[in-house]
Length: 116
Image 1 (cartoon, rainbow, N blue to C red):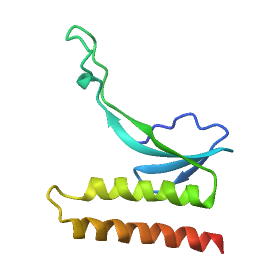
Image 2 (cartoon, one colour):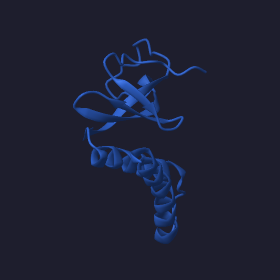
Image 3 (cartoon, rainbow, N blue to C red):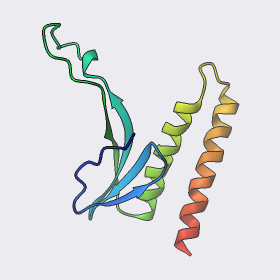
Image 4 (cartoon, rainbow, N blue to C red):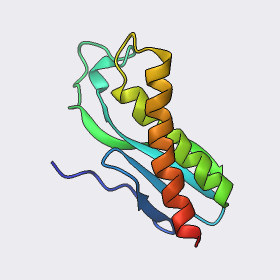
């Protein structure tokens, strides 16, 4: 299945992973997550309404100023959301923090390498 492309004119698209990307414009980095929306779960939907099929979209998850610290904060947010989606219920805090630390280290190392 091909991912739907939203209007991103005047924005640079930076793909981070299959489910996360960052849009950059002159003022902000915008973190987006690729999600499936299911209109049938809308509580305002009446049973007599035609229910559209579930679809996949890029949803905005956060906005960060255009700077090295803004980019690091955006990537840290992606790290947290990625670990959240991978972590199992009842995970021990040490294991959770280790996963987060490992993922964040990979991201920080990548950013620092790009600054050289």
